[in-house]
Image 1 (cartoon, rainbow, N blue to C red):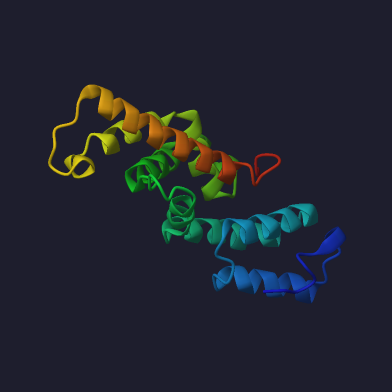
Image 2: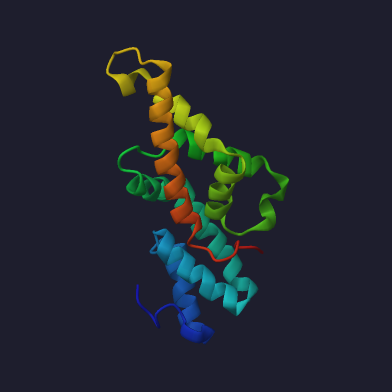
Length: 170
């Protein structure tokens, strides 16, 4: 969708703002890049009517596997763990401080980082029999594969979190 290239200089007409809100509600923005651009434009506006559609759009992005899909697009050698992402979501929902942001995506990515979930899920993934085609790996092999997972996943996490110059807060 291209209308006014995401509200340059935060001079947004009511009709354009309404178009973006409608686009958010109909899930026309479905990548982190698009959602961050809209989020930044809405943050500059500071009007409360943008908060609910932005919150819903981020929730849809995470819950409809948009976040997992993009993470896996960045981790082609060692696909990102859906179990890790599910655990981070569970922890965000259980965290009373999770209302500090309208952005479920940022909360989940931040939770993965702050709770250091990558090493655990990387080791879990590296230990799966399917990773070894029926062979029994040595502890050293599991450690090497774990490190490969952690390195690629950590890089992808950094790419995703790097989309925000500051944490998106309410």
